[in-house]
Image 1: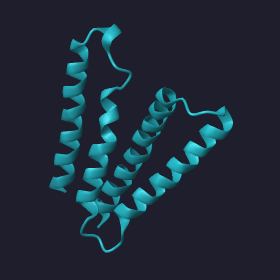
Image 2 (image 1 turned 120 degrees about the vertical axis):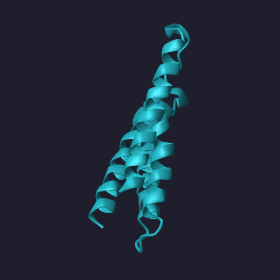
Image 3 (image 1 turned 60 degrees about the vertical axis):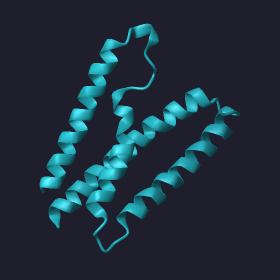
Image 4 (image 1 turned 30 degrees about the horizontal axis):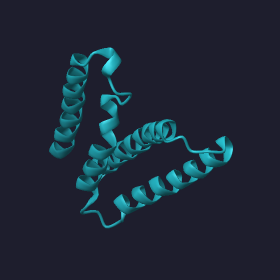
Amino acid sequence: MNQIIVQIIILIAVLFILRLFRGFIPKRKRPKLHPIDCLPLLSLFFIWQLSRTWASPWFAFIIFIWMIISIGLTLWWGLSKGELLWNKFLLFYWRLTDILLLIAYLITVIIALLK
């Protein structure tokens, strides 16, 4: 339980600090990435921390699902648009990764609390 609370505090602190740094950059020089775009890396690490002692391969399952969705998204984008414009595709892909891994992290927290 303490580990979950520490993880959530770290997530909020990182988002807050990145938001502060973003505020110091002039609007015309800001990158298109937002503070929330650092969440996939933290989410993956925190999911691994919570599930590494479980008997089931939960972390591997999450990575597998994420990669299957990634391959499907790449094929769909390439076939529907006819080309992969990396600046648009990678931003869309990373935002979708934000959502998928945040949902996976929430599910992991719920499972950890129920165990």
